Image 1: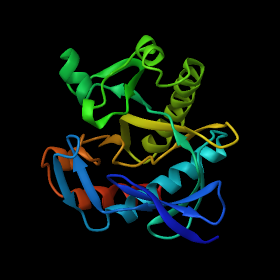
Image 2: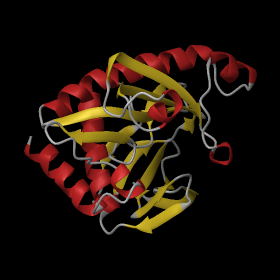
Image 3: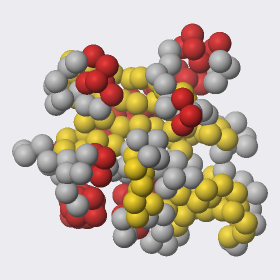
Image 4: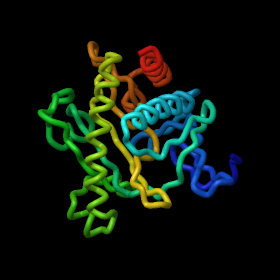
Length: 236
């Protein structure tokens, strides 16, 4: 397998073509952003940690029969994945109140929700990723509603797997964001990454944050928080 030209560069990753048209290489950068890119910094080693955590989680999801774009970890910073067309609808699953949910509805941060809440957002940086319902998605022609329902079902399955996975390591899965894509043969799969960049993760006892909120709100060293999380996952 040969890595070829750069296809796309985002905030946290670079996607490269390969000599196999249905496969790409994802390179995880150290760049860290928040608030739609208004806050930026390079955190040494963050890409290595996020690649390690994402690869570990994708391996777990594969064992549980959940379809993803992941094929294998290639190196400290690189992952081999199936090429997908990303659906511009992000799915967020919330187990506890935090982030925009607390701001929108005034529910105190850390309140446990009676059941997992699934929300959908339009993946659009210029509009700050607005919350959208099925009618919005249909009218704006963002995605097929049958695909969106399947995405929600898969997101809840991922939630059940990851809640147990993190709980066994004394970590609370507060909420997380998933992106989905379609492979060239039409399969719907979980794509992008699953890491502390895209999840809220708290220590189960102290509620210490082990995710990107550390960077967003200047709560300490993001590098140390991510290293601690990776250590727990590897030792668990």
